[in-house]
Image 1: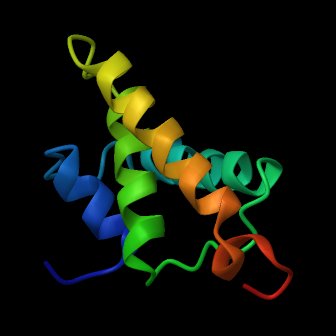
Image 2: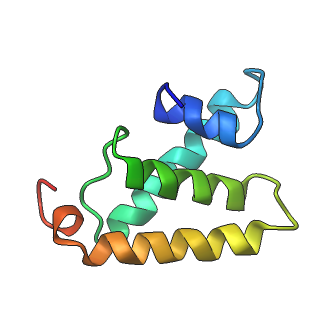
Image 3: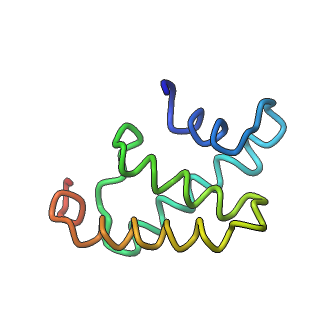
Length: 94
């Protein structure tokens, strides 16, 4: 799967148009990265596979997957907790 983090999130959310780009998708990505930073994850580069996975899980929890939103949020919280205790992610500069 190639493309930017933004493209990966859109693909994961099954969004094929641009209607939600600025008002929904990008704010979800930004909120997730801020949430991770507030939890001690200092390395949140878009090209990192673990960050990408966390952002996709967060996006799925927040973007209308009502049946599974709790499951996605729990998976995101676990991923975030793991990242926050990993030295490669919780030290300044990553």
